[in-house]
Length: 319
Image (cartoon, rainbow, N blue to C red; front, side, top):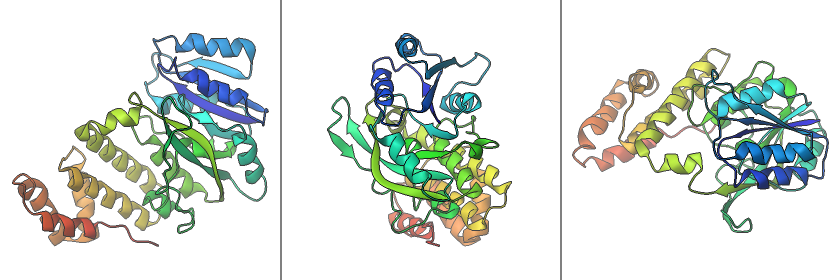
């Protein structure tokens, strides 16, 4: 059985389409654990209507004492899941009818722990209006699935693309301290645990692009985006460093963190952590030039050639 885990917050007008796409799956041996994050718009009633018809849907309300956010909701879903396989999904996306069947068939065709499929983004509300293909994520022809390739972002995938065996999550959870990028953190830890994966070269999820999505809101606030990315990189670095991880993976996180500050010309509380690591990777002179641009030249709207050279120096190697 496949356990589908969905966090929900104020999606009354969208969650019906999502749950409807699950009921239309060609593979029917599933349970869907829906964890509500405190919705106030009637989402709960919409979900209960589905439960009244199909008991494979389960509804869980996040307790007040549990930290708010998708990570804690997904972790609650993992604790309640009883299936042999885990499929994460979002409350505003659409499953292609053969999604579960195709992914499970490929996963069971060999000695694999998880399968990665692909997603297209459509312009809400027109499902046929595909506007994003995420081609820069799915570079599996050039890069294998390894911890370094994932952490350095030579490859990437979206949360719904993953279907994996439930035993992977016996000691693996989403980081509940993170406001965004929790998937990057989780899969950075997962690829350290196992890379016995297979890629399904097929679109199985349609992702809804709309102004109320978390990513859309975050992209409009550059300072918040820099802050949350910095927190993501630091938390991931600390968690990975507690395991047997290649130094190249840790270095790539610091280089991405440095690039984040340089591109956006903002710094956060994690800056001192980053710069200390950057010195050990790129040397003291590089760090001095980096700080000179960030704190002096960028404020004067000068030093663009220096910025270009610094960005070139932060490029992650291809291993």
